[in-house]
Length: 297
Image 1 (cartoon, rainbow, N blue to C red):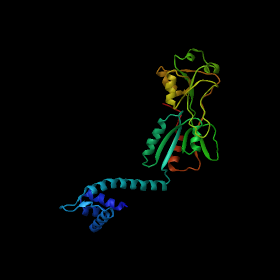
Image 2: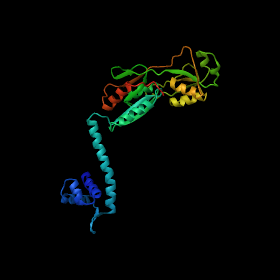
Image 3: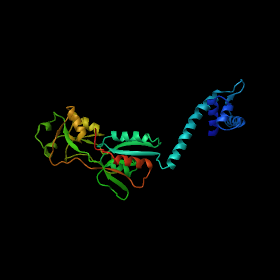
Image 4: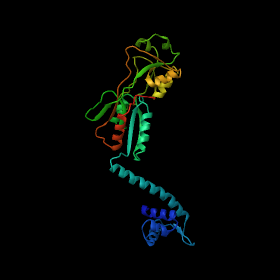
């Protein structure tokens, strides 16, 4: 078994150029340094230094040991840091789920700010849709959910704070047949044409989709940007966040139409399990609640 302390001694000898300087830097006597290297050679049954010359030099085996040993030292240091981190209340890993209805840019900006704290918590982001938002918390594949949709399934277990409502508008390509009709569009008119919906990411419950009307043909995509592009191409119709739809209007790829009897601007929640109280989770909750997460710009 390789002794990490012996690897530190070997590293010091190579970096500083001599046994004497290594001893000084490690606050040891030279004989202790020599003994450590000698014992390492005996334990591994190899010769680390070639002592036939005026100055001891690393053998090929010694060079390989030093190279690989430095990797082990880095890993050992990282393990020590993460143990201290957990002891201080910072999570090893934090998974943040975000409904595709909400823009990713504000979250990335927050993560950049978090990294400046120099904490070693691994951050993971994953997209969730419809039933998958609560499903992710229940199945513990996410620690924090931005845009959990629908009512809190268990108020005694989960905390849910209302986020800014994402306003959505009905958007279609300029050459789509519905673009020529008078407003407001009726449900019977809309039902005749394909809608574009984002796939539900639920794993525990039956999947849902934004089929606004029964028996309407649906094109299912994986995220909001794909939905936006599909509607720009006239592959289907549907509701988009108002800021995103307006981008399409400015580009001449979409028109916004008023509709009757359809309200597709649901309320989203910032949600997490009450029993989780890590410092990284608390940091993101505080920051997110102070921002307007309804804006795509």
